[in-house]
Amino acid sequence: MVAGAISVHQVSKTFGDAHPLRALDGVAFEIPQGQFVSVLGPSGCGKSTLLRIIAGLIAPDAGGRVEVMGHAQRAPSDDVGVLFQTHNMLPWLTVEQNIRLAAEVRRLPQAEVRARVDQMLPVLRLDGFRTLYPHQLSGGMRQRAALGQILVLLPQVLLLDEPFGALDALTRDQLNVELLRLWQELRKTVLLITHSIAEAVFLSDRVLVMSDRPGRILEDVTIALPRPRDPQATKEHADFARYVVHLQKRMGVT
Amino acid sequence: MRWREIVEPAILLLVLALLWEKAVVIFGIKQYLLPPLSQVLDALWQNRAMILEQTWVTTVEILIGYFWAVVGGILLGLAIFAWPPVRRTLYPLIVLFQGLPKVALAPLFVVWFGYGLASKVLMAFLFAFFPVVVGTLGGLAGTPAHLIEHFRAIRASPMTTFLRLRIPAALPSIMDGCKTAMPLAVIGAVVGEFVGAENGLGHLILAANANARTDLMFAALIAISALAGVLYLLVELAANRIWWRAL
Image (cartoon, rainbow over all chains, first blue to last red; front, top):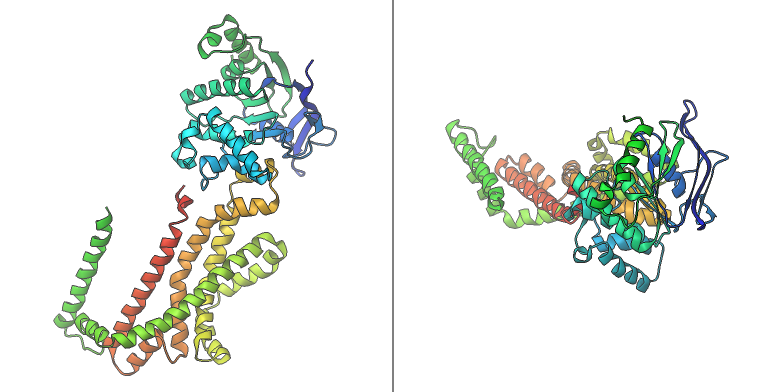
């Protein structure tokens, strides 16, 4: 058994005092290092809250606990990179400057920053675009660059909150393939939040199904489709449709 | 596209100038009420050296007042944003003060600071600084929440977040404040000159008026609007360097 990358213990979250709103209710799961796990759930089920808690951006209610790479996660750490649906690019910086930003903020040595950025740009297929500004990029390129913004700190764990949700279906499919390639190359642990069942099945080793608010884990589905996955072959695999139908039932779609 | 932006307003200006010139003659308006434009332009040309000199006096007043309005306005905006006690105490007072007719203060400033430069600079400053405060505050408060969260996630210190995120994100709004402030600084300086001065375009207007030299008065008015136009253009050029405003 590989050491755990993310451990979530009895995490609940309630917002507001006068009219308390329970967003999460006793969420618990473990993700071993290197796994690709998706969290699937209806809108407003507390998926993003869960992700913010794992990132250390907000605290869970008393009693809940999150460990990332063996350390209690009470505040943001360099082990974790977070990417939200709205990209993190600063409009006044070029692609390269945007990717450097986090490394500069963390005060890494100049040579190290340069080495990491030079390594990152080809992997993200942004080599020819380093001097462009975000508004000059296509939506897909922008999200790839935004991924570079968090990868530059070499996090072990990537938390992705519907990172491609705002893009058209075609670009989204392409980026999912890119994401798989990156994941295979970089061997990171990925926790992806999505409400697309097909996307979750195609990408993941496991899919965690969340209930309506207050969010609980309803089921932990292991996706035993062969890897490496291919957009065509994987989706034609007999089990792919089986997983999709099962998850649809679980989420009450059919 | 570019030439139309120059030619079209020029045509309008020409039409209005012609209307002015002809209307005075057609309706037989007395010259001390409204001289024909040609006479105004003549007065402008005849007195060009003196008018240029007075324009320079006013320009200096405006620029010093505007400079401190921008510096002071940004600093005040920063302090109000960053420091809740200042927001609670000083900010309401400043807002209240804005409701005051600042013109009414001009005579007092003349008594306090004399007929020279200081009272005009102060008037220009008072007229101009508030939009800069508002622009700075609005820009700082409007930093996108997801970017602030991103800076938290990469563990940026509050100072780094301020310098690398909040300030650049606020710059377009700060520049808007500076643009609004420029014409106000012009008005402030001229109002200051109206109330008590020995020099400047405002003083020239009063002096010309007293001597029934309406043509010279209009010449001074043309000088003021030309000056205001040039100064605004300069601020506009500086503002265009903050190109991400349009995003």
